[in-house]
Image 1 (cartoon, helix red, strand yellow):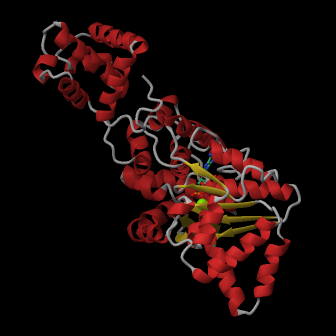
Image 2 (spheres, helix red, strand yellow):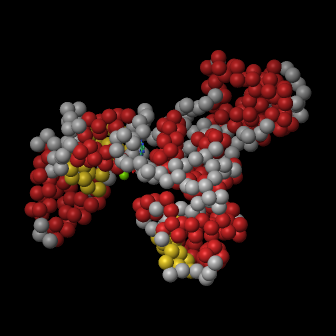
Image 3 (cartoon, protein in one colour):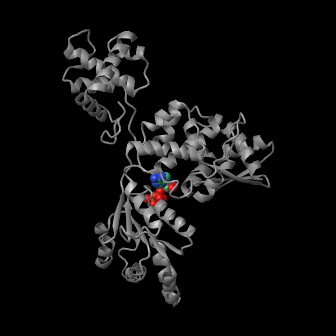
Length: 451
Ligand code: ADP
Ligand code: MG
């Protein structure tokens, strides 16, 4: 049944993509997931309610038409909201491209939340190492372990990895989201079942609380939590907490808890650096079965920003697109697909490079583009040629053209002379990086900038 739905949707998509503007198709249609085809009704899952409404409102007739043509009889289409988990779980049923190349089914779309699947770099090494140690039952470097950092950087992943490992070792693990703890406690109070609630803590071998910031500020919850905490802590059982900032900055956290947390081991998950982002991109591509051409990877990698979750979102989106179009997504399509994840930075233009370089070297644009061969002017011109080559997709003749009508061999010579200097002159290198920064190309204070 599912395969029917997927096949039908695949055929319908190849019709819809001809009918709708490409952008609409990529934004709205590609995100839909076929789940069933019964009684001549194809059910499609949308990621969230507003999305569903928009699809119903704007595209339903076109979708129904295409599905009917594909099925060769009148069909109806139901657009519903799918939970993220379910939507992702059925990705193997996504449409196949018209050419019939089978879509690789990833073993598990984004990997399980284990230590083995956690990609380690400078920004998360401490938290990772501390979590592993605790998962081995070793509390000697600090208990509790308090992991903190921004959204999507791996807090929950590490907690689940700890839980997984402890369970493998036969330990009874109590894992709570901050809100769940409160909810369960309130419920226990209401039903007069506090004893049972507390007993869970008495028999647990380890306690993990995620999003602890949601406990902060609630007096009764904090008291109860304090009690549970002391019980396990006193017995030397491993405790791990995760929050969006360090304990001292959780203003509404009671002092007693604050100092308890601070007495343990604090480990932060810092924003990713460029190198780690790139490695995560490659691994997530592999895990999700995303195949891209080298030039598309290059395009995406140069623009990565944000958290691991952002990278995952981007990979899933690209993957949905390659399912229809194959790995050779063109430049415009890649730009559209990654736009929500890479901010609004416009691509660097030749003009912008020329203006910026002229400004940095205090010469006029006219001078930079002139025939003047004095070093004062020729060198900046070389630098501009180099940056045009590096930061844009323009060809050598095109670059020669905008740089005052030079032929491609002189552009090549200029590019090489700058490249030579880059490899031997650190001061020049950092100047170049500054210029790239001004062009909005370097986002990470130059960390790992490829020159
Ligand atoms: P947080 O709880 O900090 O908001 P999550 O742990 O939910 O973030 O991470 C968001 C997503 O990114 C999850 O799918 C998680 O598996 C993944 N992730 C985070 N950090 C890593 C990492 N270092 N290696 C691999 N996947 C990661
Ligand atoms: Mg989380």
